[in-house]
Image 1 (tube, rainbow, N blue to C red):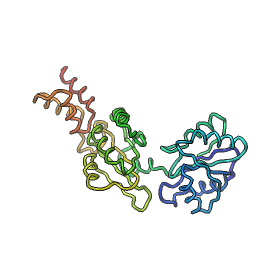
Image 2: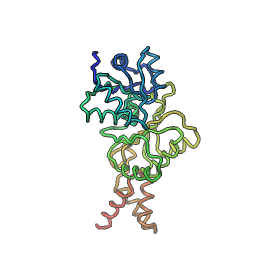
Image 3: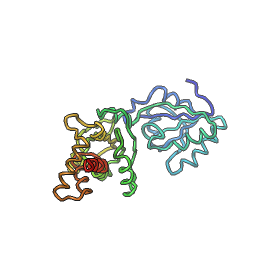
Image 4: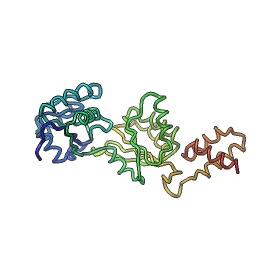
Length: 285
């Protein structure tokens, strides 16, 4: 292919297996004037493997605004550039969006060279029915922000996809169980690498597993749709009306409505607020 001057190429790179680098991506990396890389050391290993020798410019999250301006200036001067990250597609939970946004604002041409993406690979491997999904990336390390985000997405009508590092996995699984209820999860680990593994289980089982096993490798977590939206196996789906009945029975035994609905939510994996609303409907009959 002909490499255009004054053009930014957004290039997907392998997420593990170097055989996933496409011929078109390799052609672009060989043809541009320079390459913007999240970590120049990681990218240099990839380039060396394929015999590519190009100048590298570090594009890390902390300097992306400043470097984006430098790159756009060089593009205006007639050079061509490829932006890559350590693994997968730039701009997907990785640096690059600011640069692409600036290129649009400055009238600089951009082209995408699609490649591997852990997000799409994990959704496909999960085996969960997928009409839609919400990509949440890495949850904030701030407890309040994590809690608020999970509360916001817990009633989402589709799959939820998160990325997580091994040293934070146990905490994240516990937070997911506490907020979302005991839903099905697919834990996709080390995708395309030699130790690739996909484990499907309940969130409670995942919490238990990693109390006994040390998490290793990078994870993509796919949470199945809420049962009241049709997620999970048809044989085990609990309806919202049934969950409200569980709460009503607990209230009849002396539990406060809020506590009863919270217990029903933990038992069924349904939303506490939706159970309470359904319970109130029954009270009005």
